[in-house]
Length: 230
Image 1 (tube, rainbow, N blue to C red):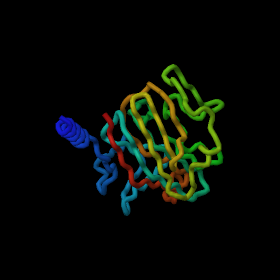
Image 2 (cartoon, rainbow, N blue to C red; image 1 turned 60 degrees about the vertical axis):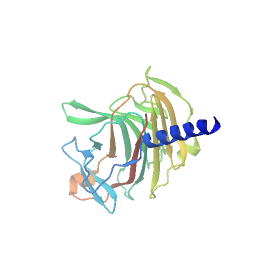
Image 3 (cartoon, helix red, strand yellow; image 1 turned 120 degrees about the horizontal axis):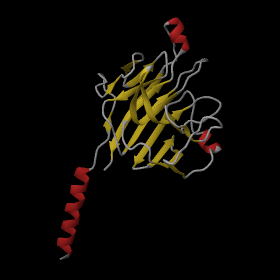
Image 4 (tube, rainbow, N blue to C red; image 1 turned 60 degrees about the horizontal axis):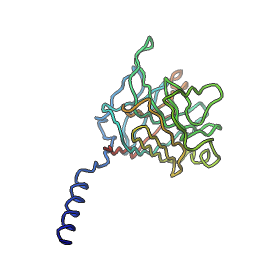
């Protein structure tokens, strides 16, 4: 009987392992898993790095939508004097208005400014800052059910390392959302507004590129993997 029980448990374990989703690399040389919903912005792959450049705020979005998942990515911000900002959108959607198409959705913030809110949660084209809260640009509603971490701390603020590769990990399971930055849990909320959508990698735009046609204000991503969860 013990042998039978052990055999059954082994079989169940094998079946469970065989149905477990494997991490998928979202970056390939042809960028086959992405499309550009805007009429500006450029993306290219060089040495397995995705290099983004844009004249305006821009998200390079996946063709596929994802529901529950773990997303890991590394991002490197440029050494420039002009404004530079980025983020990782998730559960995103296309918003169409008089300005054309744009991306909207949750965003894990990449903020090299003195504010130091990298790893925070922003909702693009929506309620804006959800964690931490901004004095004039935060509009949480009934869908924002709980913030498990409370106020923004010095540990969260110091997680980002400028001019180095920074590792992000985003976990979405139902309404539970977690963001880790270099191993530090910077965001953990329960929010039920969006349950599914695309992934978007952001370049916030370069004024220098817009006025001169060239810039070193580029954002680099590498090792962008997603594991879908049941």
